[in-house]
Length: 273
Image 1 (tube, rainbow, N blue to C red):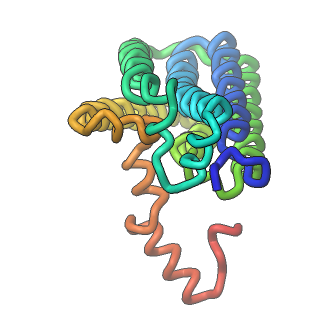
Image 2: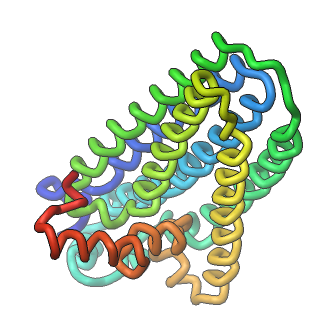
């Protein structure tokens, strides 16, 4: 059954919902940056760049699914029958091969360059000490916590609305979870600074920067590797999936093994908690 048939929703609407949520998270971090000078400015900027990366990957997926849907709608009857079979959509799609083979990689490359330069500038000022403004920091923490919670709600809604098609947008879902965790950790670090005086924003900022650079580097490596594939294979799906996040969220890493052991020993479903 085609993923965008009336009886089975495709990932287009779900991806659009989650991308909007990620863009709102970008706005929340931007508002926090406007409230707090360095080092909060750098931490908020790194959060904004991380959310921008997630939103950019969401946009790349969204365009892919939109072109795919348009090509299905415009396909003649014989092609529609072929689309209902196991044949790849790129064999009959007039628009999707151009986007899947070239344009999505151009968008990804531009996003990587922009965020790599911007994150470097944020790291340069991360170590600059500054006077703490409690009111501004408190407002920034509330904005970040609100952005993280809103992203969480829209992420859950997108995953539920996509249903079986959620497997096609796993890259965006995983990045959405990264944004949620990063925003909530940043809000907690700011509250910790306010009420205990212990500044964890420096270490959190470096951790976010390393994660962002790891995701950018992985995207470049995967893009180069995909260009060694045949053109029809390059256009088979949207780019931007992360093997690193897949490993972290998969069943092959030690944390998942530990979780499975606890579930077997105590009969508690950790994924449902």
